[in-house]
Image 1 (cartoon, rainbow, N blue to C red):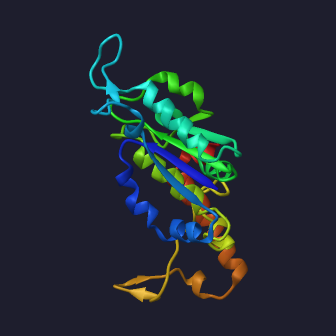
Image 2 (cartoon, helix red, strand yellow; image 1 turned 135 degrees about the vertical axis):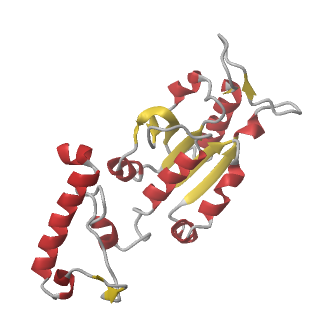
Image 3 (cartoon, one colour; image 1 turned 30 degrees about the vertical axis):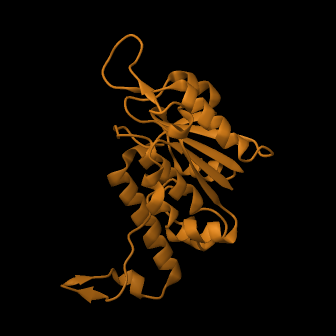
Length: 225
């Protein structure tokens, strides 16, 4: 899988490129993570990437020409593979675990990170979808892009043991049950007895009940759906 990120701040991705799972996948040849600096396609000595919006208003907008040129460059990196382009924006549909599974099947995923007050809306016609990671505002699309990259790549074959991802939150519509480890008692706080019983069926039932209760309490929206 190839993931290309269009951004005006490629240096923000230095950390995630060194993350264990992503580094392991890249070394195995199953993932290629490419950073495309939108500024490189602005032209001119000042690399003019933004401008004030037509109709007035505060802030600056990423210009259409460098965005489109950067996108075409990213697509040209794998001309034989169709690219699936995603714009990270508060106006997009909410990112869900099902989206991580779906996008992980793409051979070439392109993520476009907005900044400032947004980007020229004409670029929307060149993307297959728009995604939001939550109902709040960030300085740009770089953090959402990292969220998608982390969520998608950890599902890739060879990233983690399969059983590590099967019982996680959102995989079955519920939040994951509480987890504990040694020591069994510390500072007067004890691990639930059932987890020490060795009775696998009782443990399974306890975890299932805990998942239901936690979901009802913390995420009633998930429970209702």
